[in-house]
Image (cartoon, rainbow, N blue to C red; front, side, top):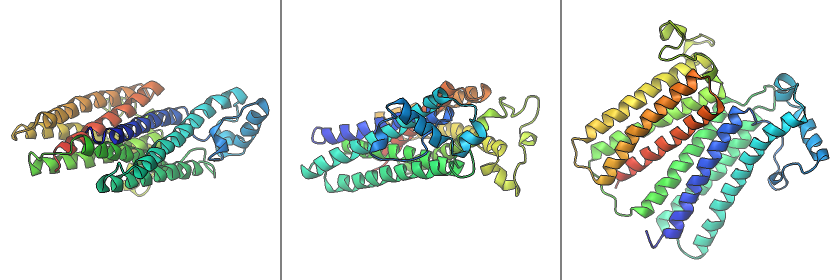
Length: 337
């Protein structure tokens, strides 16, 4: 750890900035601010409009696109400034994150602070960061053509890539913090891998829910509609039937609800199963944190749904997913050689 302290701090700083960026991205999405900046200027776009004339120019550009024409044609300049702020902040954090990854990487490379394995992993991180930026542009582009919203597929790709980049950054940091890893049991490692896969699928459907605004319907729990059973209350909006579960608002929420039960059940079962094996203190702590966090995340999901996604609960639910993924990454790392 002492030998690689600076590199570890660099990686953990990157993790923190990804966390903050996703947090701001969630606020941007929940305030419907993501399409407020209709063009992308890497350098000159760093600063927001600095005077009234520049604000009017930015607002006039916004008026040319579907979101203003179909949804926000009642907006005045002050309304526009409010949504502009969140998207500008989100993009600013993206630029800062790029600099935080690239500049220290070049310094460590010149100073030969990266061994061969860490260098390869760092290059993967740089690729993931660049790909994340591309997906952000690609996502926004889908809302500037003939619809006042972005594609929920592109939103999911953008969000999941951020989560994966965070998890991989944490993994590389853990490799340096704990160079001597121990494998308690091959079976436990494989079971945690399955848990990671299920959790990532749940995160994808959570992004679908966000992209389709599915949290604003079926605001009851445990039933999807008050006084009705769960299955018949899924509205059939798409043909063929299967399409409802990845493109229909009702069907997407249905999948996200039931995957939540599966995630909770699997993590509980994983913890019970682990009692059969000798665990190191860190392995035990990782699994216990998973159990605690999955229950907190489940409760946040229920309240977010019942209260029809107020901004603070929607953001808290997204933060919960981040912590849960971090705990899953840590646990898998402790069971991997």
